[in-house]
Image 1 (spheres, rainbow, N blue to C red):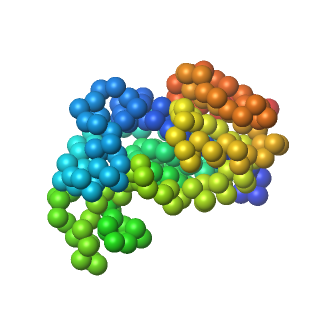
Image 2: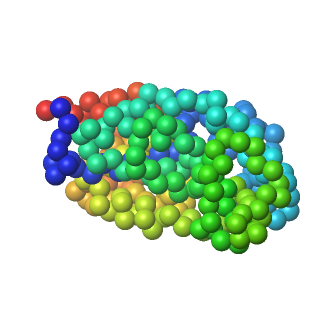
Length: 235
């Protein structure tokens, strides 16, 4: 049985690379895949774009091809299903669309989205490109060059203020598959209210503020989220 809208508590979930790892979609912190063949500064920084934009476009074309073949994992589906019981808001550091494909309806992408491109002159002119190949030299309606809609190292994170607002309003909060080493996303845990029920899901040790109490599951995303779901729904 689902809770009514008025009864639903707000569950805010911060997800990182470990959330997508079980789907076979790697990030720059993982070994293997495209990332292993490139210097991170060349393909994930604004300086890299200025040095060699063609390389950047080709690199993200490769990631987009990988993403098209990836599938949401059980953890993604658990979060989507929890919308029957909670007002679920997902803040993700991931640039994939696996949360949405699993059925989650309220997802905030801190670091951009791989399936979109945007004008180099106006970050608000964003275009859905799906999984297709993006050609260097494509231009938007403003005549400006298009670039991957990714927040690179050296750039501001425009959605961080909204993410902070979400975290401050959470009744329940979960951190899934992130080392909490990349800022400003890692700083979101400091926005938690002391009364918020909090969970940490990661097979590795992750440091969190000592002033906050987290229920910790040292598991991968799918198993850990299943344990969290059971804890939340048990009467």
